[in-house]
Image (tube, rainbow, N blue to C red; front, top):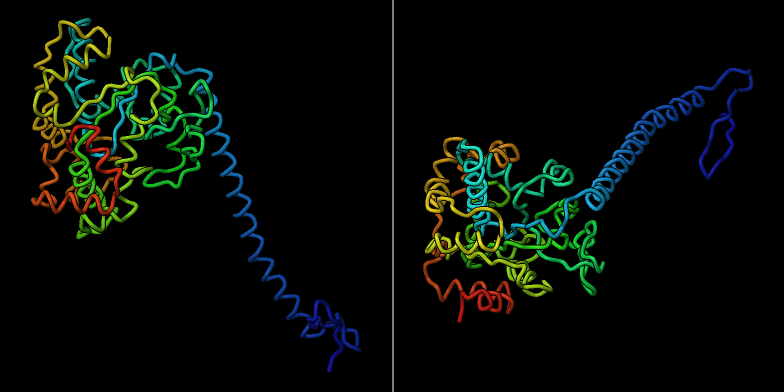
Length: 371
């Protein structure tokens, strides 16, 4: 039996036998060590590479955030079009894009046909990196689109990178994220950075019923997910549950004259009045435009036709297989869309109160849906 020394209670074979040759056991031991090193080294390299990539991403985001503060346009001139998902923001976006296209036609004599691509260009969605870059470079967009709730800033100026949290509440980038990525909290996708807000609101029952179908179509939840199971799940939230999300603008905005509330139902029932009020609030040179033509271009049936003809570039690129599975961004456009989930109003109200709590009734009352 060969001799061995011990290290950490493990037997380590001596290098040589009595005749001076290397022992078989020692050769096997050295081979095992090399194998372990061969496995560990690539793992360490991968870990180091991951750390480098994370650092680069962090630095890139930090540069982007600093760039927003240093180079972005005057915040007093920037308007944020915001909403809880599936509340009509694309409808409002088409209207704003139509107004801007009409102004362009009046100045140049050239007509622009409304498409989702044009709406994306004129009213960029800030939750996607390229549009944040467009913002930093000082684009001339009449408004920028977001789904962020309002988090008042620690800073008196209200302008800060992703730190839009109020005292006693977490900042956006510290919040338990629901259906967003951390980078989506970075400015300029931070409401406190803006001066005026176009808040699109829809009956919470209809918004969440539509959001349920939306999440099903994208494959984010099972196709047979019930409304009850959806309300219980985190997939029904966007940073915050619907009541807290929509009330955040009423609760925390210091100047309510900077807030234009566009109700989905009003846009459905009286679009001309909504557009006239919106033009006055925007205070841009939209006078003498053919508002009725813009309304017709932005009508729900027309938007559905445009989607069928040319698609929705942003969603089609993000979810390339969704359209083959039946995804449509523009669906029914009904003011009482909640009836697609349950025709019994008493029963659906009870379900929402049970799972969204007293803030549901508060939000419905404050926005005029409940008396």
